[in-house]
Amino acid sequence: MPKIKTNRGAAKRFKVTGSGKIVRVKANKSHILTKKNSKRKRRLRQPTLVSKSDMVRVKRMLGV
Image (cartoon, rainbow, N blue to C red; front, side, top):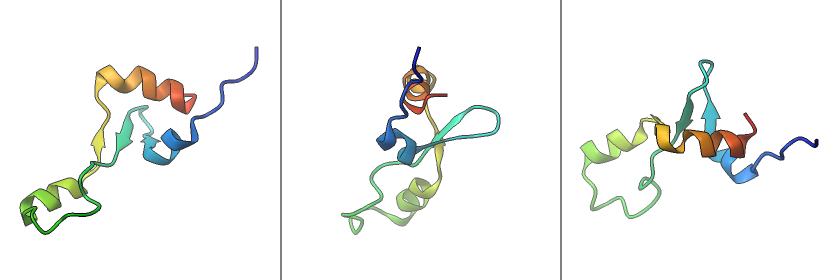
């Protein structure tokens, strides 16, 4: 049985931590930032974990 190819788009967007959790970057931080307040933009800088419901699909795309 051949190995599953890694989805390259997913590989650029997600990182696997040492404990096996998957980290992603929050959306809405690339443009149209003038109408967003400083607190919101500061919160969007923080990486966050992928939700449990998406974990299986993302792991399959990453080949983990």
